[in-house]
Length: 247
Image (cartoon, rainbow, N blue to C red; front, side):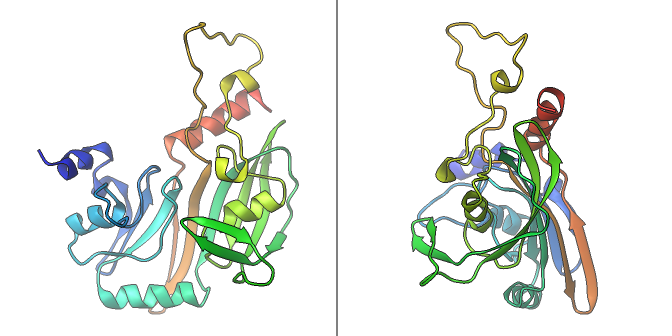
């Protein structure tokens, strides 16, 4: 069996990811650890390839970071792709993400308006002179002793926008090493009754950064669309452990 065929079995079947499908559009709940698009020179499984295997004319309308889970829009024809692209370009797509961040942070319609410069090779920085406009609105949803569940609404769509904007507020997403976010270990929050043998290495509760594309709203050909994506197992598990041991 070819390597590409083997890789297909690492992720759920594409039709199991679908939240909505009609004649023009497919909406999926993207799992973590899978890229949205083809990487240069890479042969790993990605959403675009899986989508085309399901529907040959499929085109991914936007992208999520490989480790980010949640809603992803896929057009089934060029005209739908064009129309959705215009909606994103005109900033008429209402996007909502949920993130778990380190520390207790009270965000009430906090607007972070800091330009982002893409330096290439997936590296971005805040640059007030050379960066492109970037704006995100943050609201705290739930407080724990040492963490906060936050709603993030990016108005623009720059690379790593939510991640770097949170980092500027000293509120890095847990597990996001690139922006100094630390992973969460059960031993940190469960002070009593946690044991680990000497030869065991404790793994973090969540093995990626805790960012999920939760909801999206937009209009297409005069029709309003609104979708929500459930948390994947790892995100839900982390929240459950925080509610149990860090409340």
